[in-house]
Image 1: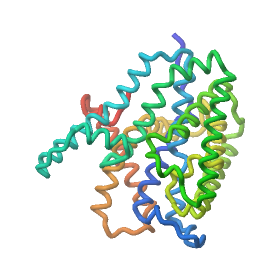
Image 2 (image 1 turned 90 degrees about the vertical axis):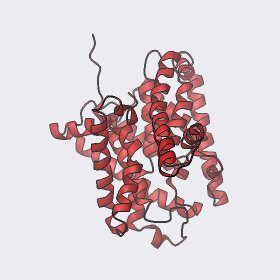
Image 3 (image 1 turned 180 degrees about the vertical axis):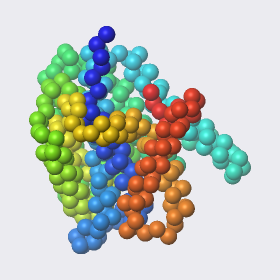
Length: 345
């Protein structure tokens, strides 16, 4: 039996992406993200840099997902239905927990279907489950996209470019209007964006394009890309008069950032760092979905316990929330039934 190759570079990107999500939600708790001053001096506050670390996290997740799923020789509908079922399992379980929590503590009866659909539509305690909803929709098309990839490569590429063109059109129209046009569509259904990044991942896997750099040059370029994205997101927030990172997913600078990072790391089998670093990267990558699911609950708890902590302490809160979410995920994954709350495997 051929041993499955694990790309440490992809695991590193997973780790960075989930860390970015935590940065985004923690930092976003310390300033009014939706309102944006046109004064650039206020826009370059440290708290905004912490927030915009997560600008490329969700696009990166979709790109990695496309890279891993559509990179397979055969993608059957049965395989995808199984993956969709595993994706929806935590949503269903947390919906049941939320239902009984409301029933016991508030004496309130809420339709569980309403709770679950609300989660997938970016509402309620687990509003971040919109990502799972969008991923389910995109993955359901994976057998067809894989067929295109294998049998009609030119058509696949044209479709990829078309989705990219739609993204850029939405972005430039938003800049012209000085308003994020994507705001009228809940994130779950901004499918032009998710299909673009999902298919980009598949395109990278099929072509096997990569940038060969030394480990130190690779890391320096990684830091530079993240910094450029942070600055780009700040200028974009001034143009759009709205600071939410989600409105930059269609921007050219985010597209290029995701592409560059994937080109850097998609073929990297080992980062050539210490054994400790390798184990840490693999550990966090394995707990990615659990951290994604649980970190909002941990964040709310931390904010209640430390209500007087201000924006200057955001890096410490980010670290606390990330590590606590990881440890909680690690523990829950060791318990047979409870593991389904934080796992999609």
